[in-house]
Length: 337
Image (cartoon, rainbow, N blue to C red; front, side, top):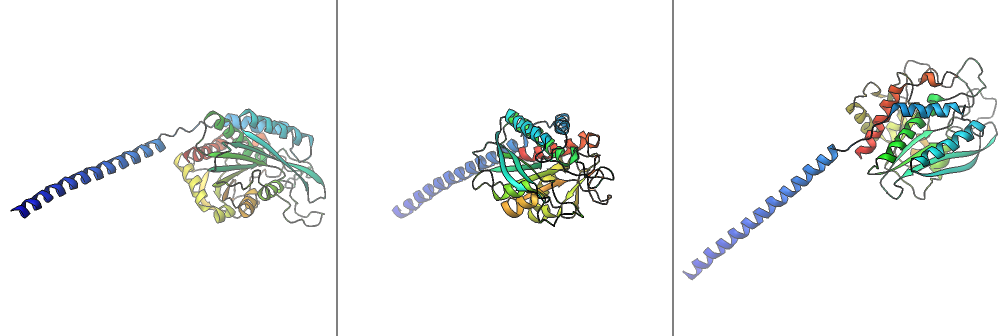
C-alpha cells in the first residue's frame, strides 16, 4: 500500500509538472506569435516619405542653368559649390573628395566627388550613386560636335532624384545609414575615332578613384544603386548585364518594389547588354554589389535615349513622370529596409 501510494503521488506530481510545462510552452508560443504579428504589422505600417517630382525637376533645372558641368570649367565649379551647400542644407555630413587626374587628351584636372552621409555611425548602410558632370563634346550630334552639352538627362537627372531623396532623408530619418555619392568625370571618356592614343579606362574617373580610395576607412555598404539617365520621356529600365552579374538579388528587390507600387511600365523584366558605367568599378574594385538603373532603348542605334550625347539633352527631354517612377521606387526600397 505504501508503494502504491507513492506511485500515485508521483503520478500527481508528474501531472502537475506536465501541466505547468504545457502552460509555459503555450505562453511562449503565444508571445512569439504576438511578437511576429507585431513585427509584421510594424513592417506593414512603415511610412514612406513622399517623393516630389516637381522638386527633383527643379534640381535638374538648377544644374542645367549653370551650363555644361565639364570638369575644370567655371560652370563645373559653381555647380560643385551648389551641390555641396544643398546637401549641407539637408543636414547631411558632406565631404568633397578631391584628387588630380589626367584625361585621355593629356589634360590635368582636379576631380571633385561629392559625398553626403546620413547616420554615418551605422554599419548597416546603402549607397546611392550618380555622376554630376556632363559630356565635354557632343560626339553623337550632327552639329557643333566639339561643343559641350547641357546633360539634363545624362548626369542631371540622377543627381536631381538623389537631391530630392536627401530632402526626404532630412525630414524622416531612415532605419539604415545612407550615403549619397556624386561622382565626377564620368563622362570625360575617350570618343570613338579619337586622334589621341587609346587610353584604357578613360571613362568613370571619379568612381574609379573612390572605389580604390573610399571616403571612410574600410567603408562598406550592403548594396548600391546607381542612377544614370533616369529622366527622359518614355524611358524604360531593364536588367543591365553588369548589374545582373554582380547583384542579381538587388535587381530583383528594386524591380519587385517598382512593380508593387505601380511602375511596371518603366521597370521591365528583361535583360539588356552590359553597359560600362560607374557601377562596374564599384562592383569590381570596392566589392559593393551595385546595380545601374539606366535607360535602355532597344529601338535606337545606341540603345540609349535618342538625345544621348547631343545638344538636345536639355530640359525639354525631362519627364516628371519618369522622375517620379524612379524616385518613388528607390525611396520605397530605402524605407523598406
